[in-house]
Structures are given as structure tokens and as C-alpha cells.
Image 1: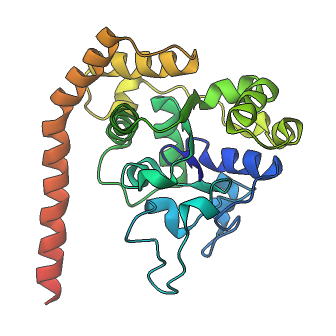
Image 2 (image 1 turned 60 degrees about the horizontal axis):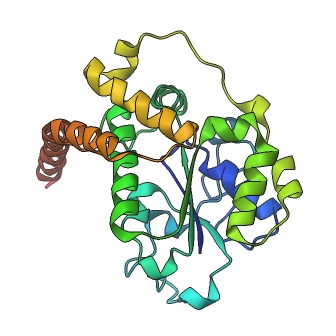
Length: 260
């Protein structure tokens, strides 16, 4: 499969439109069930949702209701959107090419707040870190073919970036792909202090967040010393993540017991 991955609100739907316009077959619905006014405003062109967003593994393939099975050799050229948590749980046999798009943490937080995503366990800035660190870790461990780029780099030069990605995939029309990109739809920055967006994260952690995004945005490789900085930040943030997750789990159990 040609997997498009990233966090929510990071440009994954935009990349699905690009690959579909380029002529690749795809898995998913452009306008899924529950398509409402808020979602239409967030992405007028559709989201290309499917059951495989949570990963291609024994839980989703064969399909739990229909029994339909997607074989690796039958889906080599099919584009599908899988968010990062699903990517790391996907069978590597299906990961023929992975196009990973990363958005800056500030813009990610603003976008999540704007569309009112309700299912997050972690504060948006911390969720941004956990997801993108998981992506980097998975790439390092499993070594499948991946092209990682920033959301902003594509908007700055869609013709060049589309041509590079389509050439890397090995099929598709790059000119048709670039024509569907609409940079004018990107929301402008809002003047908010980092403290309002970071929700308790230290400035030194945010500095590494920025450095990671800048490295991806400029297309630079991750040096050994920078990878150690990433690992150190993740070690420092893990206790906070575990505490927040435990708190949510405790509230869930309490709600279940109250209903009984």
C-alpha cells in the first residue's frame, strides 16, 4: 500500500487528494458517514476515511463484518490514510511506501482546538510530540520505505514536492497531483503565546519540538546527537503521559461502575 500518515490535522487528507488526482487507486470514502458542517468547513474536499485508519492488522483485515481480505500483493499501488498510531500497529508487509506529513506543533494545536476534537487523551501539544516521536521510532526500528516532509514545505512549492513524491512512488501524474493543492485554504497564524498553546510543557521541550519540525521542514537528516536529544525529551515526558493516561482510565472505570 501507499500509506499516507501523520497526526490528525497534519495534511493527510490533502495528500490523499494529491495521490488520487495523480491516478492512484485508493481505499476509503471521500465523504464518510457523519460528514457535518464543522467537518466540511475544516476540509471541504473530504477526508478519505476508512476502517484502516487504525491500522492494517488482524483487527481490520479481514474486515470484521464482511470478511473481505486485502492481500499485500493486490494493494501495492493503493493509497490509504492511516494515522500514526495505526501505522505503528500495521503489518509491515502492507507498508510498500509511506508518505508522512508533519505539521508544526503550534498550528496543530490551533487546528485541533478550532475543530473541537473530543477524543484526545492528552493535551494537543503533548499528543503532537507522542505521535511524531512514535513515527520516528517506528521508522528507525522497522525500516520500511518512507518519505517524511512538512506540511508547510508542500504548500510552499506543491509542484516540486508533488513531482518528487510521485517519482519516489513510481507511478502517477505529478502535474495533476499539484493542481489539487490549495495553499489559500491554510489558516493564518493566530497571535497566541506559547504558554497558551503548550499547556504546561517546559520551554526547553518546546525548543526541541521546534528543532524537530525545522529539521523535517528543511529536509535534513536526523543526526545521532539530535536523536539523543529526542530520546531524552521523550524520557522526560513519559511520566506525564502515563499519569494523564492513568487518570483517563480511572475516570472511564468510574463511569462504568456508576452506570451499573
